[in-house]
Length: 355
Image (cartoon, rainbow, N blue to C red):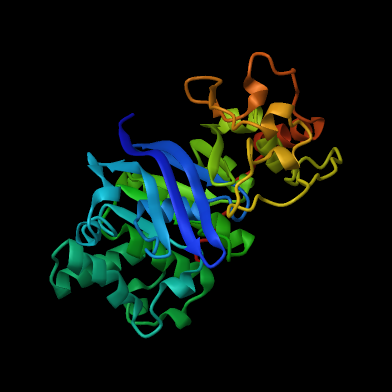
């Protein structure tokens, strides 16, 4: 597979009245053509800041890219001017945000909002843009697209608004689609429809997806690879099978153990990760997760762990992978919960129409 995007040693900070918040601290990952990369972690772990930085949507001030590279199509996006980025945003890299209602302009018809990127990036005239916009509404499964084209955002349900936002994001056939928790505000049935829609559209337009979520059940269904973030860093990365069946970082164990199991034959108590995420105004010394981990070693409180390679696709940032570290097995609750959850995963039946 061809490498489409490469993020190298990315550091992002925010200047606040209290001091400098080091939100992203040395993030490295790449995105391959046609794949879906899921980024998971608690709120505040740095997921959204990372992807907004790729889009260069971090306001400066207070935000700033301290160091690092974001290589896309042979260009370092960090070095591009705002005018140059405007040619990339919406055309080659698009983004779907959490709440579709705040993403849409309430004073404009949805047709005009879909036509906007088509006229700006594709140089289509009004009639051409209108025809394409109706095609896109049909593509994302919105019923009666010719009639709905003239309506306003408040006249649609949450699931329908999210479909409209997806249509806008896909208008110019972007190479990369960033989805920032696009199903968080939707109920389970509509969520399943939107996820299935995104998977089908990905195949049709051959785009790559970066999918941000805190729901590991979603990850099991949509992702090819998974990056686990904590404290502004990626602490584990691997294929879906590696993350679910062979997790190596204690934080990943905690996330997996806190998921409800679909296996109704056996009752497994949910566990919670103790403590709170680190204060990135004053990042902890050593491993950021050490204070919350029952598996922390003495060295975790002194030195930041390097990245260890488990396989060609599986990387872990933990001293537990050091050859001299004690052998520690994942908690039994992780093994009891995950295999049934993934093996017994059933795709929800989709409705023909979103109401």
